[in-house]
Amino acid sequence: MSAFVDSLLDLLMPLGEVTARRMFGGHGIYKDDTMFGLVADDRFYIKSDDESKDAFIERGCEPFVFGVRNDKPIVSKYYEPPESAFMNAQKMKPWALLGIEASRRAPKKTKKSKPNVRSR
Image 1 (tube, rainbow, N blue to C red):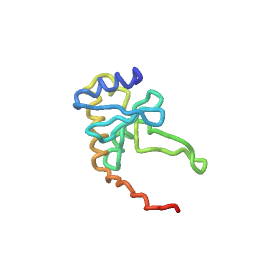
Image 2 (cartoon, rainbow, N blue to C red):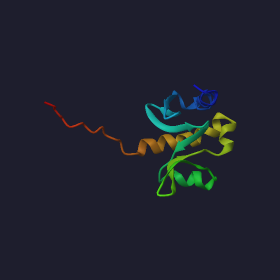
Image 3 (cartoon, one colour):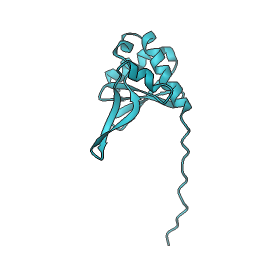
């Protein structure tokens, strides 16, 4: 794990057990098996939804942008918390809670079963 992820997990300690799992060259950040954040290029992004997105936008937070489709950047629902949140755990906690709540409100994805295909 990177030093950035280690320090981030320390910062998130007041939330209880928070874990990081490697994914797509970065890390997913989880609370109770629910992904609420991601780390890409040593930058932390927190999940948002319609209820929480404005809090990030009002503070000038940048979204996680990946790839391009139809000559337009693909913007995710994950936002960086304000820089001041990285000062200490108490400042980070409310932002992380927004992400945890957004993740819990999100519809649960169901695993699609694969059709039973037999070859002869």
